[in-house]
Amino acid sequence: MTESQRPSGEYPMYPSYGNGDASYPPPPSYLPPAPEPIEPAAPRSRRARRPVALLAAVAIAAALVGGGTAALVGELTRGDTGAVGGGVISGTTVSQSSKGTVAGVAKAVSPAIVEIKAASNAGESTGSGVVITSDGEVVTNNHVISGASSIQVTLSTGRTYPAKVVGTDADKDLALIKLQGASGLKTATLGDSSAIAVGDQVVAIGSPEGLTGTVTSGIVSALDRDVTVAKDGDNGQGQGQGGFGGQWPFEFGGRQFNGDTGDSTTTYKAIQTDASLNPGNSGGALINMNGEIIGINSAMYSASSSSGSGSGNAGSVGLGFAIPVNTLKADLDTLRAGNGS
Image 1 (cartoon, helix red, strand yellow):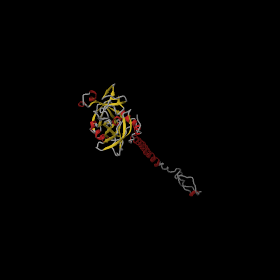
Image 2: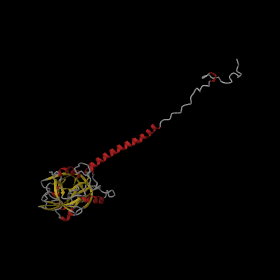
Image 3: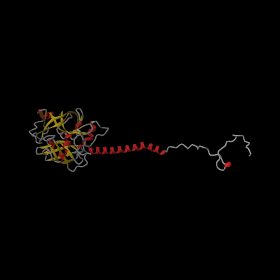
Image 4: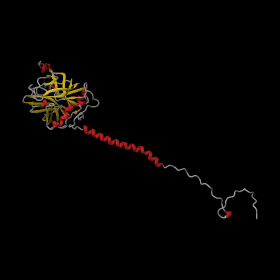
């Protein structure tokens, strides 16, 4: 037997596999480490997009809510003159640059204020009115047109229209007339008389002594004054301005002004103002500084009629009253239906 000359341990010995002495060393007992798994990018992408999707959903929801709000606001302010309470009925507005000025209010609202001439067997009287619809609905005092056989209305442009009585409410001293054949008229914005306060600046527009479009200004002197006026147009005072009877008689604080109110009277809560009002202002507008109608001028004190000193002393003494516009808005459906007291 031939012995190996290699020193023991010179070469490693491997267990054989295959064909005996021709076998090869076995493969390594370990595998190369597997590559580290890479987290898929998709989930990160989805997480990154989630806030964007959320923002988009919020934006859509906001748009829907905003659209609903706009629709609601439009519904409340679309000029539906049947609205009552504190809602504002849209019409002419004061420009942003002129807001808060008497000149701005006069420019915006004057086109919606008209002169009314009412003729009857007692003669002719002159008052004022406020246009509330573009096709010629005009609000005025009942005492301006009560008993009239014919009514003629003059716009601020000088154009005249015949008018018919639609409805009256003697208890509130309000009337609604309609111009015949009118269209495209400037309309007034009916505001919220519950929002006014003593000391607020106001503007009055009307036709005192037949002077169409006269503008005066002052403040709200008091609120909720109990004013009593005659319900009938024929109150025994004769022909004059501001309704049959000239200086329209009224009672306040237990005293009578401008003559005797007669036996048929009505009492309402009124806005008191020191804005100059004179005969012919009846039925015209008392306006806040945003150009919104807050009252319909209805009664004013005239020194001449109570003192008997003659027409030379006639004129405003800073004691005027207006029917709150919320009273008018609550009464519009009744007036349009031709009903009233």
